[in-house]
Image 1 (tube, rainbow, N blue to C red):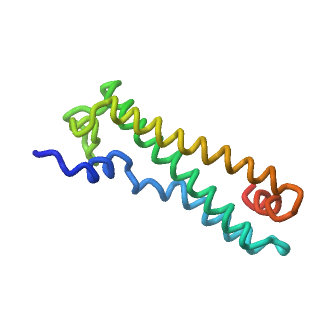
Image 2 (tube, rainbow, N blue to C red):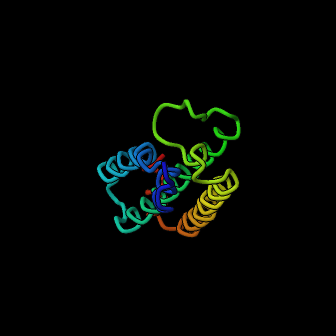
Image 3 (cartoon, helix red, strand yellow):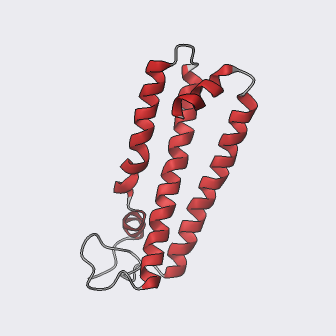
Amino acid sequence: PTRPPSWQVWWVASRPHTLTASLAPIVVAYNVGLSTIDSIDKGCYVQFTAQWAAFCMLVQLGTNLHNDYADFVKGADTDKRVGQARATQKGWLTPMQTASAATFVLGLALLLGIGFVKSIDRNQEGGSARAAVMAFL
């Protein structure tokens, strides 16, 4: 078997089909918030939800990449593995490439998370951001 194109290798390694695990609770919380909070600034709430969704997706993707790396290094992913291909196990990516990508994606999540917390803190004087956060909690 030949190596797929690079975009496809990274697609397989990131396992985007697992994003539903990080997005489903956000969709539920968003709708619950809209239906239970009377005085909510919808623009602020949508922005809050989008930032939170991006953060959650980055954490999920970074975790998937780290799992691809760690399972290969520990020997859990072998030629006998059944299921979806793992990019590191197949030799499409080196362990260093996969670990570096995981670190990069999780670093992006960290930066986004810091910005997210700072934006909530800045807006805490007005009730909109606080209401949006409370809807998710």
